[in-house]
Image (cartoon, rainbow, N blue to C red):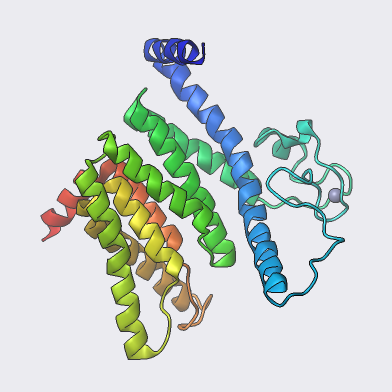
Length: 293
Ligand SMILES: [Zn+2]
């Protein structure tokens, strides 16, 4: 029954490519709306968990007053007046425009981050759908893109790359390689191993020389995951591209006096962006670098 539905859907999308792209765009908007929830709530859920673990370790009683808090409970509210966001006020982009970016109750401005994440997710999804066409690669790459957007959003806000996003995605990448979806199994496994070990060794050397921690452990796991999806041959492209863009942004920020030289800038979003580009246009980017040499 479900398989029949999907087969029909694939046939329909193959016949009407525009319908396919419009559907992917709308799906992207809806997923983007959910990613906003993940970006906001997942770090709080992680902090609650650490707190509970610490209390348990210290044999302190857990807080009995604490309300349940996860991705679905409680319902979204206005951060200022507590007004519950209705389904009608929750339509991606449109609600923001209709409400003119303000809470329906107290008129407090709603962060521009919400519509931006929705539109960005939709555009990225559209690019993926257009690049891979109606295929299993498109479906996998959509999941990959959405997880990277959520992880990057959290890293920018909290300097955290949640294991609950990177690790399942790492295993999914290896599973896909078992069926040769993007790369073969050997390329994927070597990619995951080299991805982790390369950043880990840089981290150790940097720490021995400067006594400082230049990046977080989340970055090693993220690069391992990207290696599993894109294969070891793309690690060079990913690290070089993310370092170049990261350095350019970092220097610009220092020049504009927006940040101090010692400020830690999260590296995760650059790795994620470079990994995403490599999954779609890896060979072309590699050729471009070789052309420069
Ligand atoms: Zn309000």
